[in-house]
Every structure is written in C-alpha cells, then in structure tokens.
Amino acid sequence: MDTAVPDDANAKEERAVRPSPLLQRHGAVAASGPDAGVAWHYGDPVAEQRALARGAAVVDMSHTGVVTITGPDRLTWLHSITSQDVAALPPRTSTETLVLDPHGHVEHALGVVDDGTTTWLLTEGDHAAPLAAWLDRMRFMLRVEVADVTEQWAAIGEAVRAEGAPDEPVTWVDPWPRTAPGSTRYGPADDAHPGQDRPWRLVLVPRAELVDAVRAREAAGWRLAGTWATEAMRVEALRPRLDREVDDRTIPHELDWLRTAVHLAKGCYRGQETIARVHNLGRPPRRLALAHLDGSGHLLPEPGAAVRLDDREVGRATSVARHHEYGPVALVVLKRSVDPEADLLVDCDGGAVAAGQEVVVSAEGFSTDRPAPRGPVARGLAPRAPRG
Image 1 (cartoon, rainbow, N blue to C red):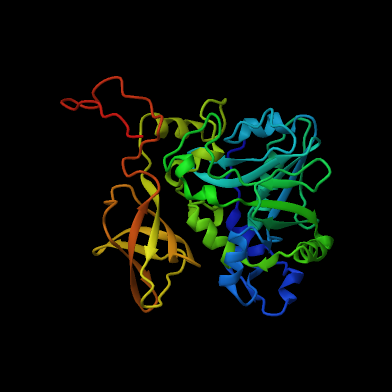
Image 2 (tube, rainbow, N blue to C red):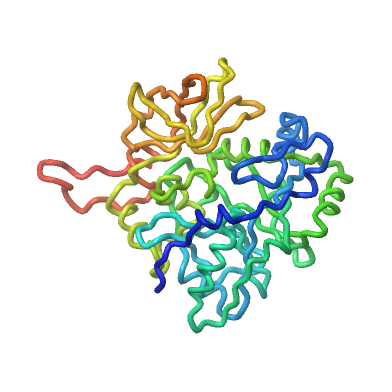
C-alpha cells in the first residue's frame, strides 16, 4: 500500500484562486485564507448571520473542492481506505470520512454522497487535487475511476437538513453532530449539542449555472450571505474544519471527530491502529474547546494565535469568529492537561484578550463507551471508569 503523504503544501502554493462571479455584487468583501475566492460578506454580516440562522440565506461555497469516483467497486474501495463505513452507502445518503496517515493523523476530510452511479467527495478546495492524485494511486486493479471536477461543479450552501431527492441536484447534508452507528463521542450528547441547531447542506450545480442558482433562491426571499456568517455558526456548533483545526499532529479524537467520521468496528484501513489504541487504551494528547473572548478591547486574534495560561503557551486558536449573538468566539486546541476551569489569554496584535473555556472534548480524554479496564492500570492504582 502506498503510504506517501500528499504534498498539500505545494498544492496550496500552486493553486490559482478562482474568484467567484458573485464577488462582483455590490458591497462584496472578499474572504481570505482557505475561503479565498468567495465573499466574506456583502456589506451587512450581522444581518446575513441572522438570515442564515433563520434558514433564509444562501451562501456561495464555490471554493469547495469536488472529486468524483465512478465504477462498480467505488464504495467498497473507498470503504477499505478511509475511516467510515461506506461499503453499502445508500444513494442520496450523506456521511463523512477521513483519510489518515499511517500514524492516524488526519490528512483529508471528505463529505460523501453517492447518487447511484457516482460517489461525490466534497473537501476544502486546496485539497481536491492532492486528494484525487492520492486516490488515483490507490486504485490498483479495481474498477474505479477518479476525477477532480472542481472546475466543472460549484457548491452553494443552505441552512437546510434534507437530503436531495432523485430529481434534484447532488446534495450533501452535513451529518454533524449526530453520532453515527458504530461511532462514539468525546463531546456533548447529540440532543444537547449546539450543532443540532445548525442545519447545513451543500448543493452542487454546474459552475456555469452558479449565478442563476443563487438568483433563484434570492427570488424566493433568501438573502445572499458570506463566509463570515457560515464560520460564526460553525464555531458555535463546535464543528471542526480541515483547514482550520487540523495540523500535522491531529488525531480525530482531539476534535470529537469520531462521532461523525469514524466507524470503530469496520475492517482495517490506514491509521486504524491509532484510532483503536487511543479509544481503547489511551487518551488524546490535546482537546478542542470553545473560547469566549473578551470583546471589550475590540481586539480579535488571528487563526493560529497562541493560547496561554499564565506565562505558558498551552494551545492555539484555530478558528475565530464574531457571532451575532455571542460576540467574539474561537475554537481552540489545548493540551489535554489544561484545567477546564482556567481563564486563558489569546495573543493578538496589540496585546492579548482574556478567554473563558467551554469544554468540548473532556479533559479526562475518555469517550462515552471506552471499554472498562480489566485490572489495575499500575501497581497500587485501582481502575478508573470513564465518565459519560
């Protein structure tokens, strides 16, 4: 099996950002970083967030990468090389899966939906080309064909939780945060998870029809919103993102990503040993948390800013947003040993801002169904049961 790591860094440097035609709209402000190519907002980000929260907004997500797999072996093959059980995925049923390296670190995160003849993979735009190249190398003698079709297809985002019908365009519904069969969670219960209030799906349209598809939704009364709105709602929903929360050391347990993207009882795949070992015997070295930032000084950290406890660096801010109700918030990845009750500081240009923690992944590092120890874990220590 080919265990080479895709050269994502080079792919990102070489990628030419395709500006969306919707950036020509009056008031459009271009996004940057992983959202380059679409609008950050269209002049009123607070109103755009509120419209999206009401389910009355459409978002240009045409910077999304799209890869297709065709051929009769497509689902069983994808099942064998990624983390989720997709071997018998029914048509028009959405899920997500991860490509891991041999040590269990996250390389790619894929939204997956099959239309009965083609499996569609949705990912960050920078990752589509290296993903397609890696998949193509893994085909061996199987009856599958892989194609990067990002140039032909564009995604639009909707605050809707409904799969596409047979006569509708290909649609991927975000499964977050529902714990999938065969999966587990390190964070809140499904019915108490803030992500339950965030319906989200991506509808694929021919790229040449993007503007018309958006106009049709505006004619129905929806507002055009930018990624300021989508990112604020994603952070509120504690939803990890490949180009924000993931670095070269990330394992899915740290981000509570097992709940939607990993099946614990499926067959072997690359990185599976780390998934099982940490779940059954170990604890993730880091943990995701939500930080509520002090907005009184009008300072906002950048993604990647250091998070400190007293004078020690204990983590990084990975996603930062201004929420229309909660103000400045951030997802942060911390050392697991950081006291969940501790107040933190996040570095900013011009100083630092205070931040309170909201626990996402437990500091104890146990999933809700971690197997109980069979005996003492060390001489003189009694087994400690996980807390649910």
